[in-house]
Image 1 (tube, rainbow over the protein chains, first blue to last red):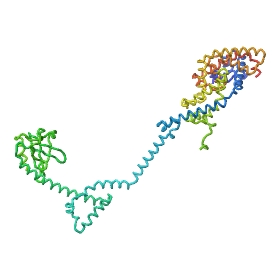
Image 2 (tube, rainbow over the protein chains, first blue to last red):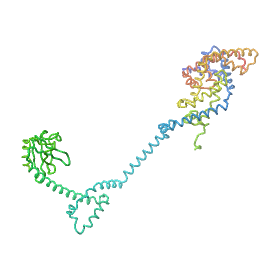
Image 3 (cartoon, rainbow over the protein chains, first blue to last red):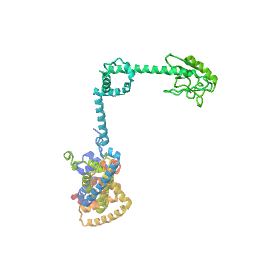
Image 4 (cartoon, each protein chain N blue to C red):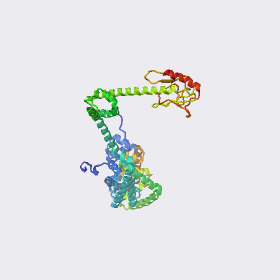
Length: 314
Length: 196
């Protein structure tokens, strides 16, 4: 409470405007006399200030001519046109105009629409199980090539009797048109398994024939400078080259084709650079050639080492 | 839509300036109406009562607003900003054209004429104002600007400090010593002041 209120020149100005020296409180008088020499100076300053204020109010009566405003408005419109041209030509200025609030910018609006669309699509995917079944139907169509089973094999099917020969095509058509549903899933699976078995039987028969043919060819293989070339129809193109000293041939199954194993990289041709490889000898894949440059068994001794093994296998 | 829009007269200077920046010509018109005459009077007082020059300065100032509205900082008051530009234009006018001394000489001659007239006791506010301007022209430009912004444009201490880029204490100090100086210089008008 003993602390005195402090004044600054702005307060002095306020005092000068509003109070004469006689109206000042004692502490205000002390403050005033710190900055001024006497009461008289305070009073004259007060009058000067009041005169300045009233004179400034009285003489501010000038006004701009109307032509200046018209000129400025034209200039403003001209500048606005330039600004509009620039805005239209700027892609980012169009998407993110600086004057607009964030929710008014086209970029945010487009992003919001996109987000809503994505959320909506996700929502319908989750709560629409029928759509998932539609996906399964599309997968069933990929299995159609299985239906191309030879007549010979389908004839072995127990379902094919004289009585239902005419019904079979209609059954096929029905499966083609039928969509994959839990109700007919077992039916389709049984048919698929049956066709797979028939295929396996056909393959077995074919391998047997090929093995017999290979044996015949090997019987004729006695010339030292004969060429031996094998071809793997499906996977690789293995070729036997001279120096097959470590070769061994095993026959896993009587019905299966013979299989030869080579333990050393030197045994293999350029196609067998990775070491031990496996190939199947078949009638179509082994033949003697005299004129071909590769691969050729040039050393009769090497061939002599290989041949007994091959013969033993058969 | 217009039903929901505020009339331009009710918008603040800062809101109008934002609209000007986005190309709203009505907002520009409203700002012009609010400030053109004030600025004309300000330039008129600052630039040696040359009305043509004052009008040119007002036009030039508004052209700056048109050309570079993005220079206005939303966080500042428009009034402060526009008077800052006006002050800088005045300072440039003083510095580059070397008219301060010329004007001081001219005004000194006018003041002598006033003193002569004073003896005839034909004082009125016009002569007082002339004398006041004469006295102010003797001061350095910072004190002169401060005083005019305070008493002619009725800016607050804070606004003046922002416009002139100085502390509020400096503004107060300048005002006080200018007033003290004027008090000494305008003693000849004592009876006029008392009468008022």
